[in-house]
Length: 541
Ligand code: C2E
Ligand code: CA
Ligand code: CA
Image (tube, rainbow, N blue to C red; front, side, top):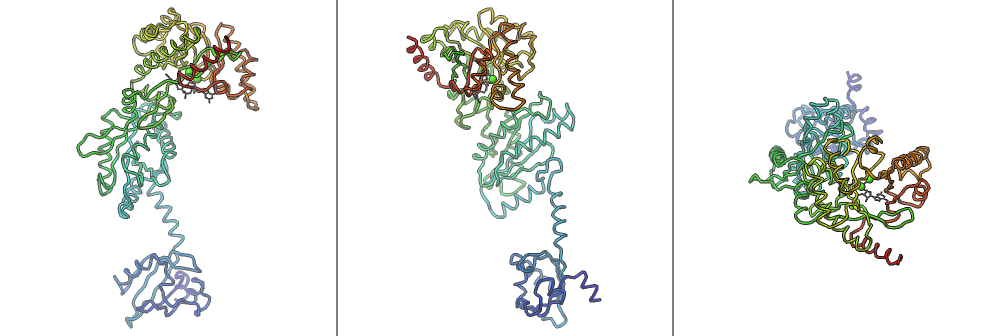
């Protein structure tokens, strides 16, 4: 009997009412690592993990006749999970306890537990772990913290149109983007469907709104995983502990209400829960509206040089320093401006601003050329050509000194309408340049058909000039070919993103006409460019 018992029971220990150890079985001495009975600790408390002592005492006091629990014991200084079963001996003054090593079960248990608490598709914590975590924060009275509920805008459409495989890929990609944005103390969980939760620890709702503005941008970026007409957004509702709720379900419910307010407010925005129902709008869209009112947008001008390094023109580039979000790159805010329906307005403003600036430049250099970027959206509206002509007339500049930079996607979109507008503007002397040339559909057919006067080779190609790889060789050949082709149909070539002399030398050799880039000049305020023009004019005189 003892033999078999010894096989399953790792140690038998007897203690008295004061926890004094009065016996340890032979296998137990080996298992605990005591060697001989001389090394047995006096008190059972010294054999137990200190964190489990209280629980063990409670168990024993609660049911002294026979008890069972999982505790950690110390073996040679290391902790070891055991299942202990004990009972009171007949003389009423001692307890006999059997220990079984359950470390391996515990590990397996944690694997099972991991599976039970994580989402299969994304690997993120699920609802169960979210609840356990939030309960834990509340129990430890960690405050403030904010529960942000995220619901993707437009996900259902992606799922319905492209199928579940694409839908899943979008969710995984969203997870990847969100994971990058959260801090080490925050938690990202998936509730199911297209709902996620971010718990921001030590952060009140307003701070959380500022931090999660980057989430709006991250989700608004196009998804490579889905066909490119898949445009997503995210509506975020927030509730803060303890102000907006003192338990998990209230916090989640209130975050959910705020999220619906974000949806109703026009989506792709952040709302914070308020009892009165009118949440504060923290969306980038609202910030853009405010920014337009408060004059937060302005233009910078990047000089363009001919191949003899003479300053001949500039590209107008939009800038935004937002009161709520700080300085934001146009690559980030322009897609949101486009999506929110404000592009026509902001584009018109940029055009007028650029034309007025051009007039000032003309006082120093009458043939100075201004390039202005035009979004495909602007061609979508009626009367774009009229607006351009109006801006030019208002500033009193020569239309022949204005170049509109359009992208290949502009030309692919609503062709008839766009072509009509281009033709009408061309009649008035305005010229067009194809921006980011080489990255889009690059069909030369439309270049011969449309009134385009130059192409702008994308900076990705220019970057490749200097590097020594085989790819770079083919990029160099491609640049040469693009330049020759363009020249063969009477188009000028502009290179952008020229950062060093090596690149400049190559482009000069290849016959490129205009150079733009950090090597010769970064984007700068209008008055700084005016000063440059002044210097050049004086040097020439
Ligand atoms: P883009 O039209 O291709 O503009 C050129 C971008 O390259 C600018 O970035 C410019 O600052 C940057 N750049 C210039 N030289 C160098 C260089 O040597 N090295 C490197 N690495 N970069 C250089 P920015 O100002 O951030 O603008 C980004 C994009 O935002 C623009 O790309 C354009 O697509 C868009 N954008 C800017 N302003 C406007 C605007 O008024 N309207 C519209 N629709 N789009 C705009
Ligand atoms: Ca451009
Ligand atoms: Ca470009």
